[in-house]
Length: 389
Image (cartoon, rainbow, N blue to C red):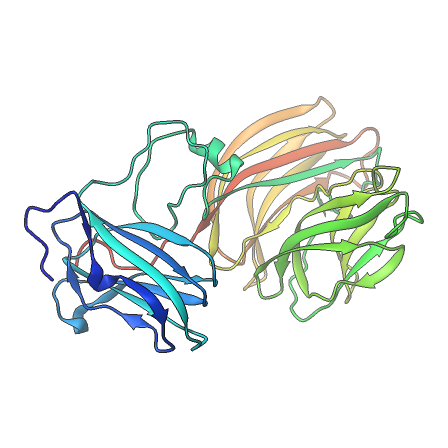
């Protein structure tokens, strides 16, 4: 089907659409001319798991088509995306990975309007993702990240807090919010939860009863789980390589955890994360970048009091087991406050942590260190073809 040189503002494309049975062999459309339009619109609902492919081509020859976009869609989940046209022709393919016959409603169309733009205050999640080139004007992008309005981009705070009022300050270098320098980088090691409070028990304890854990498994994929807590040591049933956050999810009449709760790897017992007594939430300044993501470091904010030492921002290459300093900052007893632009890009699988290095032994006097790195978790820059062939 050749579209007109002077297009309508909108054109429905039956050749790249499919309504009705979804056979085990899937669906592959012919190449459709779209060079006179600006945007491909794709709407999909299916009762089977599907894999959607969008191809582009400089001609109507199937041998010249290249992949523009690919995504997996879980059964009974509605999908809609707009794609910027990057070729004269495009085609749609739906793969049926389970080879189970189902029902599908795939509707594709093209629009002559340029990239979507919104000038109002947005209050719904954006359907723009990492593999589209659409542009919009609306709220502060930073505020939208905080509110979670973007599917494929996430606001990350790497926050660490340590105080001599709530924990013993180590005499040697340690990761802020943890009892030692975080170095764990082993796969295939089981993970334990260690609960010290006598009343931190499910289902009727007066302290913590459930705790939510987020972080990465040892294949570098994210996990988000809620566990019932009981005094003593128990296995998580997971091989965890990094903990992002621990939050008490439910508690008894105390309304907080009574004692220390730690996540430890079962080999040497290194602590991956901890919630100090009564605090309900962890504050460990360590973050490992998930698979197929990268992390933009914006700036670090430091508010700290100590008798003398250095705060160091560290990137660790977990493949090579090498650490690199991204910045060193002196603190002293006069209440140091500073903001420093890091403007760094941390690749997938690497770790960012913030350590404190005492000058000589354990610091004497008051110690209160509060550090936070503002960061943005992003998808990898896609390797799909650009506008040129």
